[in-house]
Image (tube, rainbow, N blue to C red; front, top):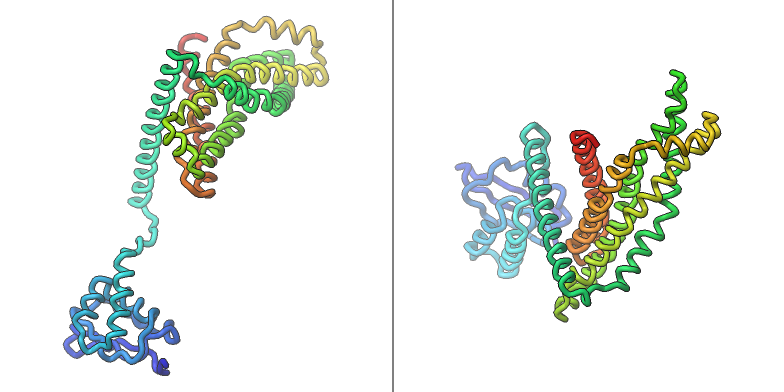
Length: 373
């Protein structure tokens, strides 16, 4: 039974020896904790023969004080200790040594900020290299399937076209219709102050033909489709289904990735076209009801827009689709064997897809402006 006096740390007159006495048990843990924290520097010699009672809590505090490896040496070189107490100290010391040292508490400052920025850039570069490598694997797999058309999985392709394309028509049309109405209303409000409300038609037409039609569709697909791809492939990875495919000599990229990528590449331009029509419809409705522009005038103004503006928006759709599908599938392959890992990578796929889509759209806009498109 443990005594009533808490353990103490007594420093010898020479200042080089520290002697532990009393009860080092859970009952006196708080007092022992304060005593060990009050020691600024560990002396060269530590004596444990004065300990009356000892349990795991006290042994852990001693290991934190002198270190796991050194506590093991002290216990092994203390024949005066009872065998049971020596075994307890050695066991706790080995466990503490295996755990290693605790990470330092985070600090804030210019150097720490630069370190975090460097870690973020390194992580982004590693993700970019992995993405480029996965894109190469997908393209190589597509090349092999082109040589041998019988390897195409048309049933899976049609299924993914339905789930990613046809089922997404209502939300894409509704969202772009609402955005088109908002843009037309804001344009009529601002341009009406200068007596140029009629140019609301041009504002809606150019914005949707060049940018908003394909961009809003790509963002919706990034949130809807990329997350679905990551969750599905991540669940397969967690259930070891992908390992089962590899064990059978089958290529998971060919079976799971290629049909999804091709389906998104095919349906995103169609959805972008529907988005353009819905956005123009929303803008036309506001132009008719708020600005009193006849629908015939609206249709005539739309038809006068040069075709290259529509092509400048539509040509970006396959590139957006390819990157969205590849990122979603890649994050699914990176997911581990837990539900938390699948959730983390699903979130990551959505964020990466939206970021890449907006970045690529900005680069494409600057490029088309430079070439006069």
